[in-house]
Image (cartoon, rainbow, N blue to C red):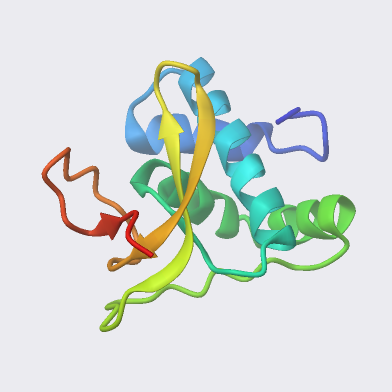
Length: 131
């Protein structure tokens, strides 16, 4: 995400400070967030972020004018954050996660049973590839 594309430099600085992470890492998280938002605007199924992407999104959203302008300039519409507190029946959607090795957002179509992944590990039963 190019921080000169609108001025999100202050958003990234706040995110770095709030989560006590280096600026370069914050920029990578915002690149992943941008990929997530792009997918969310095109997908016909819901998109679910992992905790890293969701945290970046929350920080971006509280800068309401910058976030609104970013959405309108890049996607021609406002992208709402519609959190789900609990998912009773698994929902087929894209689970989107930040990959530390590639420093990019990775997405996988699957059945999701919790709104935001907390990085539960390999034995987590919150997501399944079963159709």
